[in-house]
Image 1 (spheres, rainbow, N blue to C red):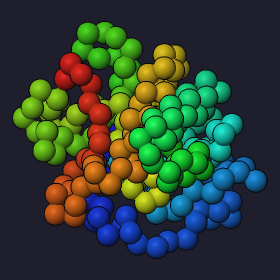
Image 2: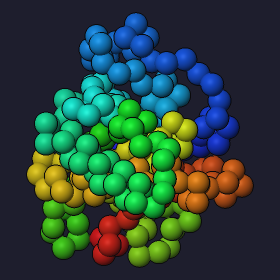
Image 3: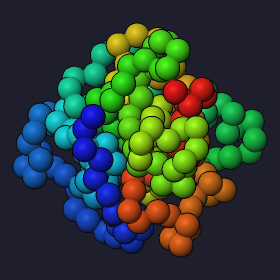
Image 4: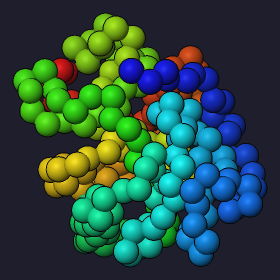
Length: 208
């Protein structure tokens, strides 16, 4: 399992920082593609333990950073998940952050691809934090389909998929809903400082 780094202060979420341009982060970023905020990139890499070397955008303009070139089906799943979220948001009277470019998605290497029942379940492992000792605790960490890495800008980490892209779509919609929802944003005092956990983490339903 990849090493999970610990302990970014909440202040990092609000601090200003330069953008990671092609000159600053030449690790695979292609000319003309969307730029990723350097602070947001560092946070996502801290949560996942990965280096996101490939930068691109979905067909509809969401920013994507990945450990390798994403499959076209994965990019389409991100767009579809966001489209579904936007439709629900509009029906409920929301008018802000309904642009694909408002979102940054980090596609991490999966720490496992099957759950305890043997079902396909690409997940990332993160520190157990307040879930320590629960059914989800796997020895100091838990498996999650995705994790919110930043509230401003809206950014989240999901695991790579090579099939069942409907699952990836659902994970994107869930993470996006959480990353830009003021009702689920954790306060500085409630955020763990020694483990990598974030509001809105989605755990496997069977705890496996």
